[in-house]
Image (cartoon, rainbow, N blue to C red; front, side, top):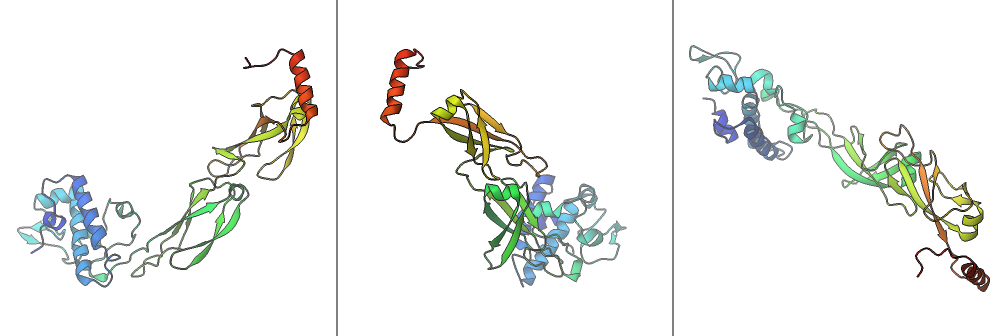
Length: 296
């Protein structure tokens, strides 16, 4: 006699579809063969659990089961006798029709239970984080990463990569079982804080120190960019807080389709050591000019 499917999942007959799904997910994660290698009892229990969910997780099949039109093996019932081929998983081999198995298991496996013919399960994914420099995401680079199992892998950082982007390296995860495909390596990119540039979407921002004479008279000054130093024109009579824009010298935001800009905020800066001549000029200027914002 087939096991009552509700009892198999540990839920009441009045359980909602969400409750059925949660119960299946909880038990399946515990009983999955990947978690219980060489444990035949757990494997058989997992098969029964999967068979129960194949019916109770499907609205139409569940209704037929509740009305007694199909039995616990998913076979149609005629005049009180089960029909069909019998044995194995219900409904064409327990294919979880209409159910996203990868979603339920978070990518634990992609193969399906096939009655008494064993499992073909996808290998688990390997996840890792790779800290990269801002310049590497702008220009592209190749970095080597080491996994906990001792393997190393060369990772190509694509030009235009962004912070938090996950690179999927197919077939570089754990091997599958029963002929199932190998899992993937999922590499999350994390851009290190930069000593000069601040990332805001596709744009970069920085503070650019300029001297008092250059701010007053104007000048060409060296400005750092991710691509190297460039000559930047500081207009005459520039003040602290003025922002100059370098088009196409920023970063990327999503897929590297278009490069952002670099914004340089001018910071008028005094020399570390003030010589007497500069002090005398400032003193004379202050006496002859009333401009002194904020001074009492």
